[in-house]
Image (cartoon, rainbow, N blue to C red; front, side, top):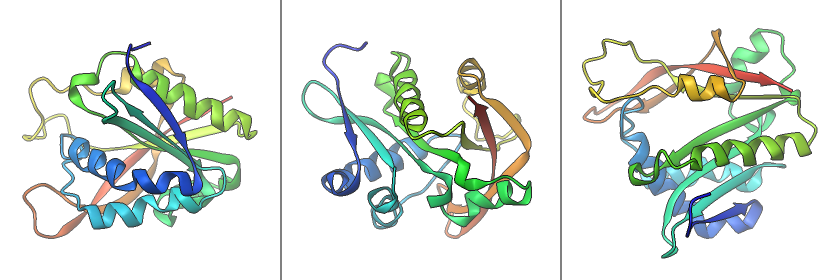
Length: 198
């Protein structure tokens, strides 16, 4: 456990005061490789409102000793997510009502490598199990190994995800559009799902 930090488990209206904080964290972290996301707070506000209205959604914000937000993670039933994230499962014949979806986990660079990411997974998985779900999933953007924008010190999280019991489903994809850093227009991005069965 990291000393001096506090976890805030939020749902429904309790998330409202934190919407801009979480949106700002998403923009800052997802600007990095591999997402290269050029976000806007207006879009983030609308996107994150689904976690206020979705039944059984959970958002966890972590703050430092000064009360400043340093990271956050989200989850909700896949049936409450947008169609882009449901489509691949439906095409594969899966019942999306039985799958729990993990959204983002974002953490500022200075706090990485201290076990907070593991605690994010612990809390989301505990929430999904409490609700009776036996399948959890998340997706990650696809980037080629030779992408020229890839930093020399970039480390994929595949090993961490496998250590948590997740398997990469190479045939299970989502397509979602966003504006990349330095670009004017949104472009379609491909993301691959990882799943775990309990």
